[in-house]
Length: 391
Image (cartoon, rainbow, N blue to C red; front, side, top):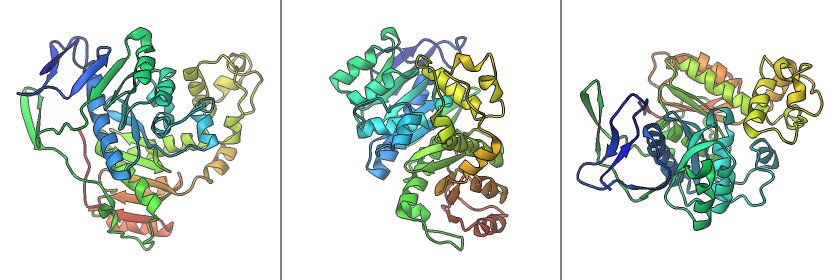
């Protein structure tokens, strides 16, 4: 198939629409559904991300994409009992490495992942398909599917779920183009290999970055490579826990990603784990209720006349003082930035979310201020010398 006709482009009024490659076949096969323009943008960006994560870590990798940026990404390491509970997979009997990777990708920011497009680095197996089956999702791209997993996925959305198989050996041309306002832009593809060599220039007094933290920093940089800029990514234990994408200000990226990382950690607090949810509450409603419960608008879900919709008994508020004490327990977090931190305020904000390791390009006229701020908190920071803008 040399081209694929699409229903419309980014919006219904943008017609005609298609994808194609000059003089060769497309590297994909649509096994089910009719993916749209934005679906395919998410699919191809997500596939590149998980392919690189797999190459860098050697582990099955997954990402959850929304509007051409990842909401989450993770590798296939086992989940703790707490993570299984907050990701709503504690009732599943089998969690394969591929399933664990997607649980991490989906669970990082479940509100943003609602209606995601999934990318998997490896064959989609039955445990992963069962997990996906009960989530609200637009589609999936993977190099292959087991027959049983394919049938499970085909049952989603009344048989219209988008399922794409990609040729994992496909290699694009080294020059890429796109048009804006009828004008063609051309550039070399960003084929930069992200590995530990980018973490050798440690510029802070603290020169120690353990191997597991190097892996987390590598994950953050690979995620940023496929995130709309400006962007900042917080990572812990093999998964993105907060991504701030598409902000004009670097500090706004850092705050947005840090707030998401804080929510991820607060979801693990006993006050949240023990919320007495009704047995029949829908998964998206449970996500939204938790999000409100740990926000400043908590009364919207625990006041009289409202709590009865979600809970079997009225929960106590999770007050700010308790939240601050719980957040102090989140340590060893890594953060990557796709361009330099211009001021130390980014480090100050990152530290509040447990950040102890940073990777960023460096090159600001205020690098000395940023380094001094890291030294104040004994944070280890590497200058990668590489910018990772993506548009």
